[in-house]
Image 1 (cartoon, one colour):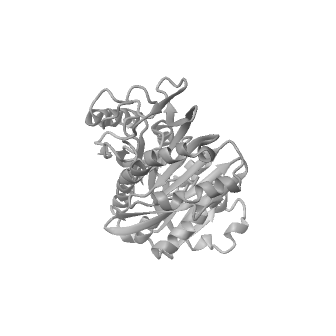
Image 2: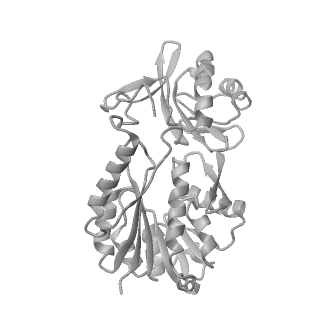
Image 3: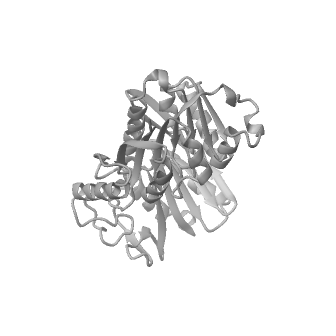
Length: 374
């Protein structure tokens, strides 16, 4: 990827080697962390080297009546104004610069504008959020309302205690996963995987691990930290019954809508934290949110966890050790390695993978598949 801001912009901090060399180096780093638990080859899933990011947030830099997009600089001291950003997917890139010109030309639209956020699908569904340090009154709404038609976008305006949605506050990403079309409604402000191309590879890797299990031995499927159903919905095809938990109300709302969108009916999405899920399955507490769910009817054989950077809490790690098969998706290889110290007391790592969600950075998304020993 060629970008004139490499070496200045703090968004892409690895730039002095080829992409292939950077990916190989990440694989070696992950291999070193997993070496105490896994001594075989780690599968490396690469990213497109440009136009790969479907979610982007830019500061707005003001210089009189001129405005520019800005990012934090590589030294983490101040910002750098940018004139290109080839990492964003084409539906964003084709709009962002013309949009900036339009905002700059309107005093009411540029005044006290401090940020622009983009969320887009690979199918050209684009949501733009304009962030302001001022109340958004009737005059601003009148000036902004034509942007949706002009740029083929959905538009949101935000300021303190204000959220103005002109048409809708979500996009729909449709991908071919495991040979099937899967659609996800993704809401503004909700968590989404930023790299839709690598996301498909992550999901298909998880499916491949499940397919190594004899169907008669899979049992039912449990997922913690399920988000909007990113893994849940494609994986539900391989199970009779699925229970998926997530603490975020907005994510559960999106997950339920995504079930309807894809015609899936064998998943119970429940709003529970991982700690509450553990308490419920151990029958330590009763939850009203589970009053319509018969936990005793499940025969769980496979669990998927995709925890935050802090990794698994101790109780959840102990709980999933009771499962025959564990799929662990990690956004922090250091806490993954820490959790494997516990999980490999009862399970062995059968396969491991690195998913390069964030090219040109040190960030590593990874996955391991564990099977109970003996």
